[in-house]
Image (cartoon, rainbow over all chains, first blue to last red; front, top):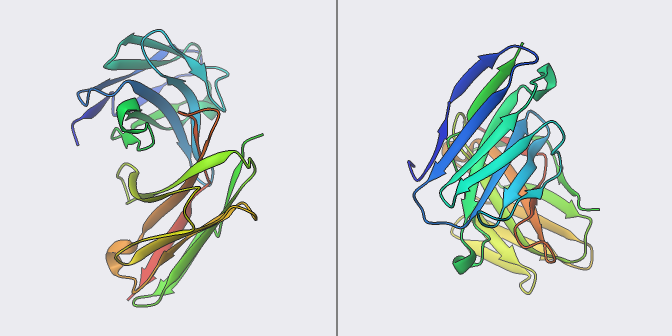
Length: 114
Length: 113
């Protein structure tokens, strides 16, 4: 499903480096989210945004920041990456007009921090 | 606080048998409960959901039940098939935080031939 596109799909970096994961969508949805997936821990919400002027912290926002550059773009930054941020990151969208319940996920960005 | 617990973490059933996955949630204001399926190497996708004003919902071989009093909901898969092998996540949405959907830790379901 190319409606929600994440880049890069895979990234290996070193401790202390700044990393940006990007998400763009063509679904016209107003709400965007970043989740992190770790084995045995499910999907944990990092940040979410209702529109370009709205940013909210999720369950695990420490060490992360986000930017909603446009309705269609939501980027996640790790200012100084550390090994325990190694995970699979998912961007997702939902639509207020449809009740904002159904999440459409991107394909994921696998980040490894050495 | 908001918490969703999911059990079991792994489940193996014989093809054709039924599978049940259970979740509990902590916040009584939660009003929407979706289930997502994630096949190996793929993204999570919604398979069924239920709102707090409904006790049960069915869609072919899958069904979800909700017990608001006990703050408990379950996914039932009948006549399991190999393509049902995946990781399943339950989730809950807090009423006062319309966009905040919290997920359980996932159940890896394996179907034995």
